[in-house]
Amino acid sequence: LPIFDYNLFDFFDILGIANALKLWVCVLLEHQTLVFSSDFNKLMLVCESMTALCYPFKWPHVYNFLDAPVPYIMGLLRRTHDYELYKRSGTVAILDIDSGELELPEELPKFPCEAELIEEIKKIMVEYGGSEGIDLLKGKGL
Image (tube, rainbow, N blue to C red):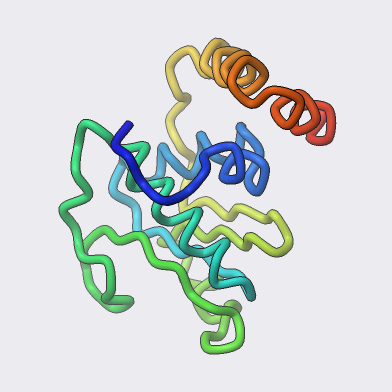
């Protein structure tokens, strides 16, 4: 992965591994992706982590147009945007960081070897996350 300013352990802690993979699939399939939170730092962490996880690909799409007919990843502060308005669109993947709810735009194709990938991520988190990684796995029931 490229060097960036956020900790992927925090990313997986916020989303959980399964939701992180689902959101990643939405990004890889170039779905419009909205992330809501009342916490600006969590918004940045999740959006930047998602673009970093696309490595070695670069995220070439706009990062700032809500009404654009192209794929995007957008973080919105809850107090400045109406979450329910976007939720009703049906074409956008929406993550509510505060509640942990992930709404998908359609039935996503099954990610190849999903269970194996989840297990590998767990192993890496335990190995490189020390007690923090173990606590994370216990706390999320993963």
